[in-house]
Each structure stands twice: as structure tokens, then as C-alpha cells.
Image (cartoon, rainbow, N blue to C red; front, top):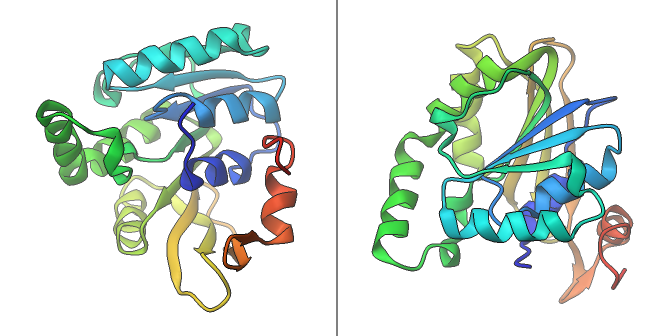
Length: 216
């Protein structure tokens, strides 16, 4: 199963006190959905993936999982996705950030289109599908995060939490994990460091992922 740092970090850090219904947008091969199913044993997890090949792989990974009865894959664009239930927790690691997931020209075309239009559609759809007390968690490059926060405000969604991700203590923020909700409370902000030194993970990183990685 293909695993990337962005995916495992948001899968481990996205939080909600007691979600019953979770939506993973752009699930890829299903890593985040699987992590959320493990972390929230009372929740049902819906996963949406536009790419047929990735969705097929996610379906196989879900079927092999002990959480398979609570996991559902939907091979569809988020704009076309519908649900009778609303979601307490919506999570997305936009797939076009990982360039090697897109190999042939058609899939590259989808990725380029997503980079231009995905976020407005994502926020609009999340607003439609989110419960009153629900939370949206996204992992984004810093500049895009700023734009998404502005877009979200037009839908009545405010920034509740921001986690600044750093490779190590000497490096600037390379991604932000942001949480949006309708509560407009006090902003919680923190920094998270992945490495202590070259190829040596921080204790914080190991503690966060020890329940998911056999190596930790």
C-alpha cells in the first residue's frame, strides 16, 4: 500500500470528540480512511476517489481490513457525490500534491484540473455535507491554506485549529493542517516537527504513529 507523510499525519491528527459518520475526500489507496476507522471504532467511514485505479486499490485494502464493515469506497468526483447522512468529520489530503500518483496524460489532466478548481468545490460540498458541530480537516501548502481559509469564511466556516508542519526545527513550515468548523471559537495553533536530524524521527512523530507503523 502506497503511504505518504501528508496522508499519515492528517490521518493521525484530524480529530473530533465522537464522530459517527466520517468522509475522506480523495482517499487514494485508502490509507487515511483506514486510519480513521482504526481511531474511531464507532464511526462509519465513507471514502471518495475520482481515480478508478486508486479506488480499486482502496476497495481491496478495505476488504482486507478488520474494519471492512465500516468502510465504503465511492469511485466518483466529490462534486457528484451525494449522501443521505451528514458527516461529523470530513478529511482531505488532496491527491494532486503527490505527483507520482498521476502517470498517464489523462490522469495528469485530472490532477491539473483539480489544482485549479478543486478547493471551491471541496469547501462547497463539505459545507453541504457537514453536521452543525462537524469539523473539516485539510492538509495544504501554506499559500493554498490561506486561500482556503478565506473561501471557507464565505460559507460560514472559520479556522478552529492550525498545525504548522516542519521537516525539522531549522526548517520553515512546508504544510499546514487546518481544521474548519462553524463554532468560531478561540484559534488553537501549534507546530509539529518530523525529524530531529537526518532520517531520525522526533519522539513526537513516533508517538503519533506508533499505533499504525510496526517500525515504531
